[in-house]
Image 1 (cartoon, helix red, strand yellow):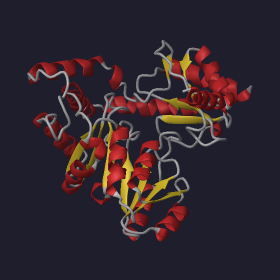
Image 2: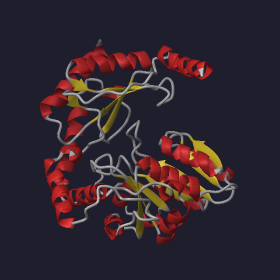
Image 3: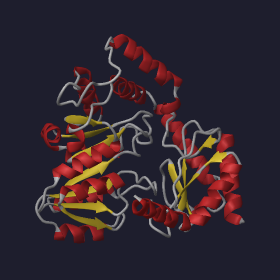
Image 4: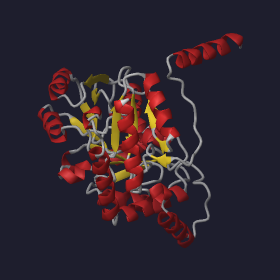
Length: 373
């Protein structure tokens, strides 16, 4: 056992030496500029009360789901929710997964087979990378949002080809040239898969619905743990895709189903989302207030989303900047390599509908002092 422990300690020591050692942090009383709770649903008393009322009216006395959905864990209530969400996003069908990670790993690991091709943006979610690896398909990445790079990879594709992008990128906060990418995918007879995890909320139903191209997208992944304030995800697509995932997605087949409480939470969050125009407008206003408050806005990565990033290009500098802001009462976190490529370490600032004008002014004041120091 000593050799195994020595290996573990060596790996951890290397992480510490490179200033990339990760630790868990407990909740705090700092002003939230780090969570993905963009609309404040996770902390909403109204949503909590709606969930409690829904559960009381259901009369389903189940703490857990009792098994996988293919055994004892499937409920009519869950299937009705899937249909409701699919209708909300104007698509034929959907299948709920226990998390966004489960959804991406399940989808990408089974949809492409040996001899097929998966092409992903180089900044795609880690869960998509992991799912693609499990598929045994040919895998290519293209330069971030680079159409020429994508077309080169499309020309090399074999078998069934799937192109994967995010509608809002989780670490840069920017949008892809989605319509141009869709056109290229169609030109080469490739299926486009879009992860909308960070688009829901700012774009009420997601960017795909906003652009009106739902019927041209092979699959969408919508997660519930960001702006919806819950947990889980749904893969949207055709009825055939839903049936395929039920039969072949291992992260769906071989796991205990989500609890009734989780399904009820998702249902009530979607009901709340339907009437959230004022909250979404508040989020948009806060994004503009933040950007306009910086004396050097060019120091930020280009983004119109709730995710705003200040590049510091070094793990140590990013950590120090985060500690500085936290000491001022602002919960801003550093994103370090290897989570992002070396040389792109940053402060990742998440803005929310519930952040006050005073809080955002305090944030921009201290960032300006950091930049100008």
